Image (cartoon, rainbow, N blue to C red; front, side, top):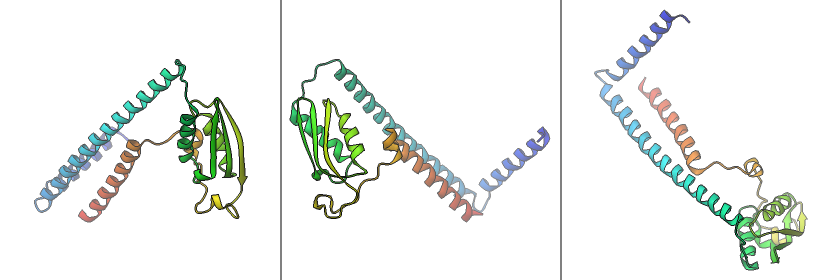
Length: 195
């Protein structure tokens, strides 16, 4: 596309935008809608930036704590290790009550019933818990909940690809993506009604 054609298209686009916004009949309403949307976007962006700032600060604080814990001898009692393991299991499996956890001298023993699809993730997650040196896996793996009362009343949690690679979408990021999608849908709907 040559420079003259590009200039013509830009001029036509600018003219159409001005006509749309400065229309004597509906221009004031359209300008007010654009102003309101700009204010809304600004507020949402400020909120998302604040949430992202807090999230990054919390993550940095967590990294500092982890780094500090690498250089200190943290004598953790068995009850604390068991609670840490239970907290990790609560985020991973749908039937934490079916799994018994015990700890002694840094060795965690897992026993009870679990879905076969969850067992590898349970063991690998428990190995990463702070204070755990070794894991004894005495879990009984089941393909389904049929005939196993402890596994009744729910479905096995699917371990999605984000959890497998260890990443997650942060809440501010997902909120910003959702807000952008909703804004695009609203603008498209309004443009369809205004034309």
